[in-house]
Image 1 (cartoon, helix red, strand yellow):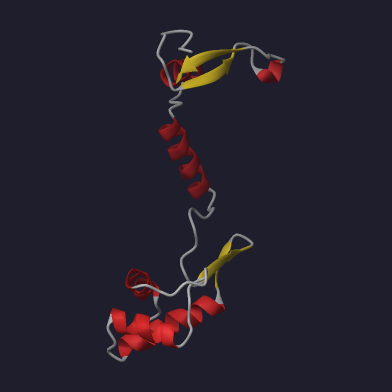
Image 2 (tube, helix red, strand yellow; image 1 turned 90 degrees about the horizontal axis):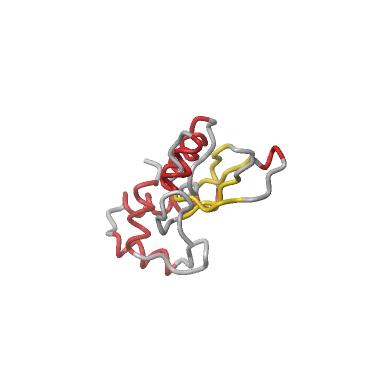
Amino acid sequence: MTCFECDSPGPLHQHHVIPRSRGGTRTVPLCEDCHGVVHGKDLRISALTRDALAAKKDRGERLGRPPFGYRVEDGELMPYEPEQRVLRLVAEFRGDGLSVRQIVAELEARGVSTNTGRAFCARGVRRLLSHAPT
């Protein structure tokens, strides 16, 4: 299948010739560029994604996963105590002069694991140190 207007192979969108809001049911395949011309805007997936993320940000909605140590409750970023304890422990170990590898070993010795039940790795501990309270 190719674009109805320019014969481009795609990516294609299905454009309603008569808008669905007015009872239209039939569509024609249009490439992103031609579909954008019809609607007077950029309809490439990257542009649509960028615009949707910007709209979420403007509405104050959270983008992405919350950082370790926090949960989203009723749209607000709230401290999550089980993870906050791990952050404090990692910061304490670092303050005592332990290296990242020593921190990993100490967490494992104390039975402290990630949210998925796995042992912490050096990379994960370095990431925690960037979020640990000072």
